[in-house]
Image (cartoon, rainbow, N blue to C red; front, top):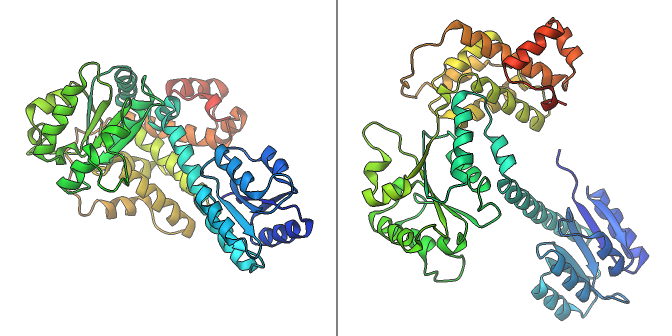
Length: 443
């Protein structure tokens, strides 16, 4: 369940503070009250998890000065101003300064609740976006999102660390659903440009004229900044580079050439073409392709990642189980083999969808993972895979998953894991070392 958002109520009249607080508390908000703006300022920081309700007319620091101080602390903090009769011009001025909205006394308590809901919804979105930006700028966090211990994923992480430190432009390709955009974020976070601007646009999302304006300008109504300006000094990610029209390819090449070397802004191009009859190279000007593909990362398809499939399925299953407030499904040996053998045409994105549906099925007590896989692959062209894996690999993948799941369930308690799996301590230690599992990861 989402944590209740706070409402800070600032009013010099005790009766007014208490009545607003009681009403909003009954509406599900976590309220706190302050008798003066000065007291409130001591408690309200730049990431305050909620909104503010403040009277305009107060002794000492009045509501307008209080609002200006709050806007200096956090421009996106929603502040609802309460005005007396005849103070509407002042309320309009408060809106100009940055107030979220205002209520005129006497007001309907239901109006207050509705405004508080809108304000806290806006605040939650602001805080979520801030947390996401911080997360995307943290190289350690981004690398942890690239889940998997297969050799191809180990190489991918090494490539990201190496190329993240380089200055050249990068081309990322791979099948749909393999996580190319996540890798673009990780490249930015792992390099010297971490903390600098990061801008992303899909070249397939706009008609040519609109795409040209969004990329290079000019902007007609001032509604946004051209991407080349927004990303200046940082990273510009071009998704679906294979959809970039020819004339804009020429403009992009000119933009790259004018930057010189090392480039002020790094281009990370993402190609979504993965078919034998059409490649990214064939859809782009050769001179642009070779400028972008000087550094290249090709993401592995999920079917080549072995036991990572079981690790990913388990992790996402746990996440969805927590979200829906139920248990995650237990995977049998037969289901583990089916997961490992599935073609996974949609890669990790497809696996996430199936993991969510498996959790919902498990909550209802119906269906199987096998039925989900069959339904998901009915209309999918068979994917050519390498020859079958030896039985030993299936056994080891399932064994690793069992130990991993049991360690998670018991939060790293070795004694409990030994009891449940009927393993002596030495054997458990050897298997954990073999599969790269560390007790500290489960505590």
